[in-house]
Image (cartoon, rainbow, N blue to C red; front, side, top):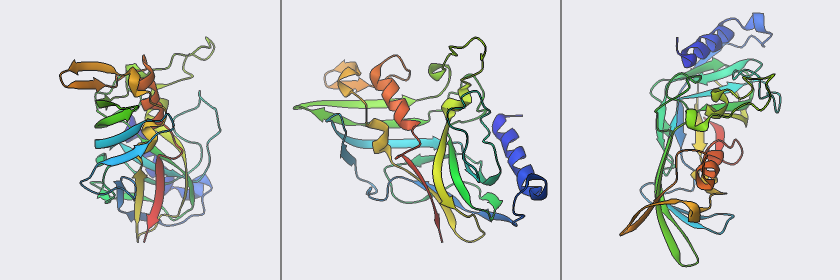
Length: 264
């Protein structure tokens, strides 16, 4: 069984057996789930912004593949790198059908199937960036696909980037006593994301993704030049360079990039 399916089964068990898990016993609910780019984006136009490193960036393409979304009633223990990728506590909601989102559009893009949960307050959320088994050593799914131009001091760098999360993002344990302290699933799950949501049968769970946060620490001058007439550059899909590491860190950041809201 794929790990996403295993977690789905576990989450459903939590929802169906609330009395055994100490929940409030709220009824099971079903609801639409959608994702979009930032509210101030304009559909069909580039997204322009300046970074803290002094770069002016214009994105012409930016998509994100979301494998699943979860809502949780608890806050996970901070810094527990050797803990399970399943948060402690009770899941109040889940969406397990994947979606490729155009994050340059502010328009809600619906997931292919509804989410489900209970009518209980969720205070943290998770965004799963995986196309299959979240524990698989490799996943060929392109999680982020972007293109644009970065400029500074009169020099422009047209660039592209395709991001996957597999052995290229593996973090080796530095403690022999904890060989599994950094499982690959940790690299594929963005959490905890602060939320204040009570799922219900009326309304839609909206996940907004702001790609500007992906590039906050990227030094575009260190990108690899792949052609010189015209000049084109690529951000490598690994952690061997500053741009590759910084872009992935931005994608994996839980603050300032991902927000959850309940729309009536």
